[in-house]
Image 1 (cartoon, rainbow, N blue to C red):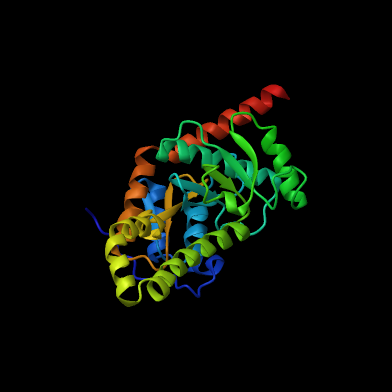
Image 2 (cartoon, rainbow, N blue to C red; image 1 turned 45 degrees about the horizontal axis):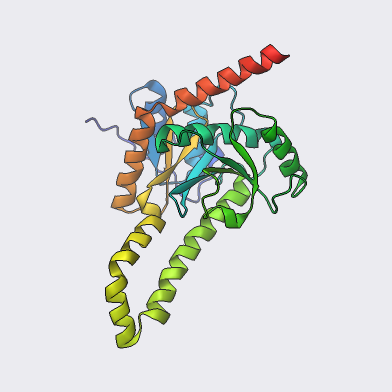
Length: 284
């Protein structure tokens, strides 16, 4: 194993557009350049998310046909995981961007999670096609008209943890709120159990009996279990880890990166977008 020295740091206070070109020897930039040159198979970062995205775009580059790379976050459901994207890369999107998110998320779910036919949903305030903003309505029409996406229609916030969809697309503003809300609810639930349920001798006894089940539930809800979120749409594997990541989270983020690299996720996304472009040209 080799080590490349990176003496500079992109802090959480740095503006990505300014720090990435200026801090050429930061760990994020060095990592992105190693991926771009082929010296590394993936970049894993728990640092400044904006800097990781900017370095990925500047040094690794977007895949052909991808307008906006997206952060895809796996959220726990009753049956497994639901991939939500975008989770923070794009606060504002156009309808066609949501179609691209759906295509990338579907390929990731197939490649990494082994889901043969992922169900894709559009996060909205209601199930009807006419619900939501103009962007949501137009995106619904485009998704419905796109063959091979497995689009099941609009899904509401309550549907995400129920597992009705394997991939849920939305803009990064909404997606990041969903992510942070889910993290907050998980923490609050366990705090409530500690404060209000496991008190007194009866609560202590209940806690002892329920400990194995609660540990299993906590493991499913813990962000450290999945390690990080892939930045889909760039020419290499990039995993964005949580800023509070501990050793276990970083280890799992590295595992996620290794799996995405082994399954050649960027190449599969590129192939799918190239095939879609050919289909559009043939119909034109």
